Image (cartoon, rainbow, N blue to C red; front, side):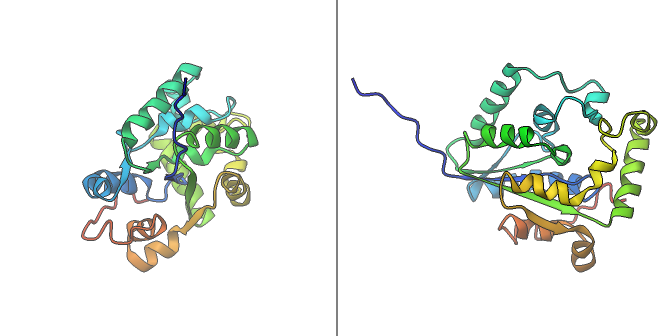
Length: 226
């Protein structure tokens, strides 16, 4: 009796991980608007433009992300991972490559999180390319605070221990962030301030980072720009 084997994954996952307040909403909306063109070029998207629920599956239990504080994520179960894996497979269809985006991925820092992310996605892809967008720290901090105030979470985050807060001092450690994603792939790093100065939008730089420099031509989106 001859058994059947599942072919090894051969495609690439472009994983946009934020950070927060670096044009993520514009990127996610732009990808959604270009979904048909991406499909024609063999790249798929998840149904959710912002895959925050997926990202929260991998986040260490102590970190109080916005989704966890609002009661829309956690606690996680094995069934959640199985369902998420099936969702990726369905969205991928017969294509090889995919783009997934959520700034919640930038909250990861520990080796066990890296192991879980790598094991989960390597069931579907041969290569993972993290896309990380960074900006000047003072602007990053100010915009992040503004975001948390708008969602009513600022004071609650301030009351947490530093290690548990999604706005702790560890969050702004660029070196630690890039070291983490280097455990998973070779990060494509975009300087938000340089991109905005050169193009007036984050979209052209993001298109170049994923190897599709013409993807967003003629599209102007500037959402949640502060």
